[in-house]
Length: 166
Image (tube, rainbow, N blue to C red; front, top):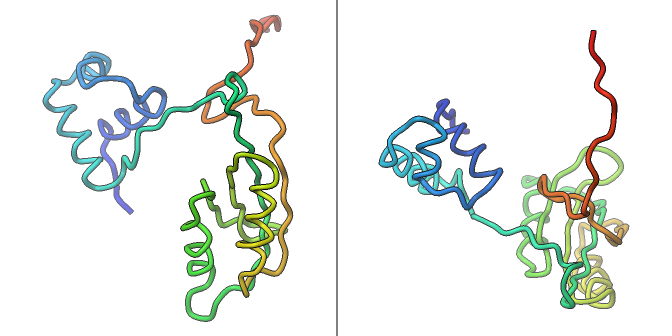
């Protein structure tokens, strides 16, 4: 694991909030030269600390709505590799968006995206469940997203709570 300096952490946090921030804007916000910010970002990209710049899409606003499922997977770890080999086998499928090793009632949480319910169901029954180490799966379909990656999808009203003062 890499230790980051204060400037690197500040740049990462600002880009995480909004990846469209330019080096010029970051330099203004942080009081550093634009060249220094460009070098920091380039170094973070080269070291794969910054892996990707992504767009959060509210699919419910367009006709091409995707179906997303969170699949709880119980597995038997492989001797010598633990969960790594099975996780790799699963995350290489193009339908799989994320895979997490979890504590609790199941071992892996797999996020899958498909064009419809049948696509996701077929993935679970034809690709995921037949893996030898998979003991069980539990598929949960996302019905509605309210917030993702810090972005609120709904038009929300102002916070009308009263301020409490000492």
